[in-house]
Image (cartoon, rainbow, N blue to C red; front, side):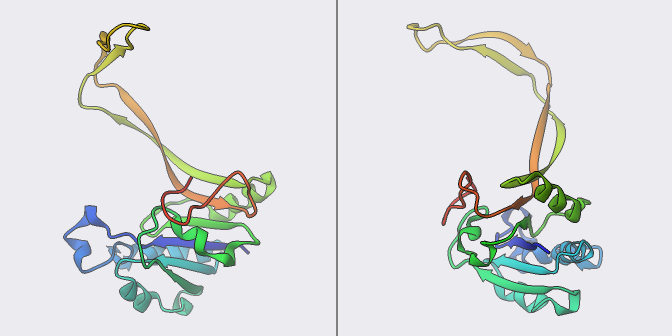
Length: 194
């Protein structure tokens, strides 16, 4: 069965002051930390080999989850000594070289069927499969439509229209599955996923 990587190294700055003392993956949802809910869902889908990439408050996260045995999984840890950016840890995990693996954030609750995602990924022979969630957000303001200046003209632009409070459709990455080797996709040693 595939492995999972839980990215749990961020500082959770948008949730301050709560995350001054509790790392975001340990913030409770009901009576359980959010990352525990994720781990239990992974285990329920047969994914029991988990690597947690930790950074901020790593000792607290490790103390809570330990080796994962009490959750029915095996957890190992990669400690980011410096900020590596989103998915930057993946370049440093040689254990992921030979089989597909699933990556999720340590604060992402989803009803996604992980087993189905992996099965579809393998059946398609894809190098990378991304599960997204699309939502529509309505802007509270009107938006100007602006025409580019004609070639050779000064940089002055013309307003050609106004759209009143238009909806915007956003597709946000939730979870992805990756197979190695995949020459068209790189995981940088430092920085965001490219």
